[in-house]
Length: 317
Image 1 (cartoon, one colour):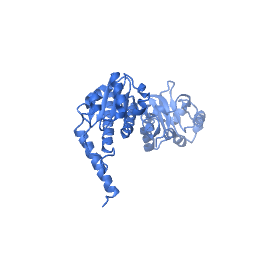
Image 2 (tube, helix red, strand yellow):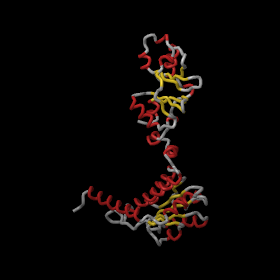
Image 3 (cartoon, helix red, strand yellow):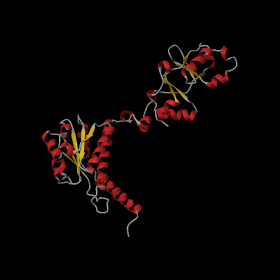
Image 4 (cartoon, helix red, strand yellow):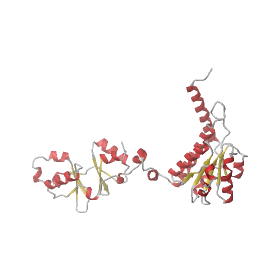
């Protein structure tokens, strides 16, 4: 009787999970040395493989590149027809081959030997051609493939991808690669938006609705209308923040409003944020306090204004 699709799925996941657990238990002895050597690379980490291993190589290269390690995937077939010129003595090469006998890698292996380019093998073939040629071998367990016939690259590619992730994370930690560094490499999309700082989208300079203590309220209302934020920031001559005037302040002081000065109407000690606050955190503050505007200060000096629409336009929701 044929197994149901869900039963097949559970078998596949259990097989690959067991292989990953084994990989963790049998982490290659050379792992630390590989990380140390790749951290010394002045150029790029070139990652390559044939077939499914090539797709894994491209993913590993992309993960390296997005976490602070310059990297590039190179197709071994294209390398044999001119792209070997992309690989220089300042680079290092990681070649992925389950058996270690993938003949399409031969030209890249020879190129590394010719120009003394550090070569890392990711394979389960301990005595393979690739392992013998490599400077470092990341030996993977000889775990069974998860497919019914035991031949389709499944478990082996999963282990290779996980080992590549382990390298990338170990290297980013060694480099001190943090959230702000990550944001620099991910400016687009929701992820990039969540890692933006307030300073990236805040209004500043001539855009700010500034008034001073003795500004007549008639002029203050004009500033609030012209700048379009619904507030005015009360500052002294050195642009130190003294207070804020909101629609609520106007309503509370409606009687005799036009006979007053900005300093008589403003609310002192307004809620503020810093330029290096994450945009997602600033949006959380505005949502929690039911505000549409946050003034941005550096110490006691007003340096910007963040409107809730700025956060939403940036993709933070």
